[in-house]
Length: 234
Image 1 (spheres, one colour):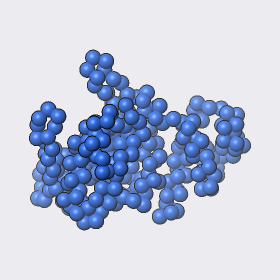
Image 2 (tube, helix red, strand yellow):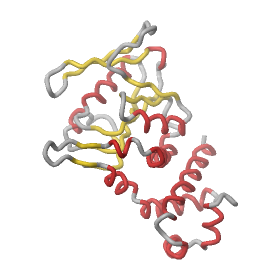
Image 3 (cartoon, rainbow, N blue to C red):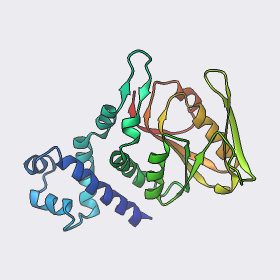
Image 4 (cartoon, rainbow, N blue to C red):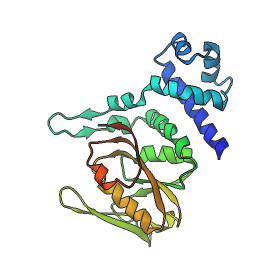
């Protein structure tokens, strides 16, 4: 597993280097990283792979230069009249979602057996992360699928007073599984809290919740007992 985690780190480093190079010259990269431009160029073009110690040294530097949090914020539009957050530019940017997924993959690689995502906007990000983790993905829906006989079900009351039911097929999760809930955003935390309870019904456990962004602080009360990892807070 350690070897696989190191591979994930190296792949993430190479993708991050491509992003940073778009906005910085070789001279700037050399000054900031302390690495010769020739070496960085060979990494970028795939002529040679960096060793893991080099990657672990350079990753924090490149992450500061790339500022994925600012890139995400640039994709978010807020309606001044209603306050509604439009994240379509974010959830349709596959290259950005891939990079964000890679930035978290090696952190969860040995801690997760299955990824769970509520339908629908968070599914692209969750799918990319599941691919890097080498796990299956469970998509939680508000309707039962035809042909499935046994479901895990959960319900919660929405902010507008509706009772919302959620489902996923029972056979997709096993007793003792470590589940990571992945989504694009957390607002109130009601849906995610319900999924935590659903996983518990299956005698599995949620090791954490990973989202690209959180809105406000309302979710903190509902999810106070679950680690929540996020890139941006709005």
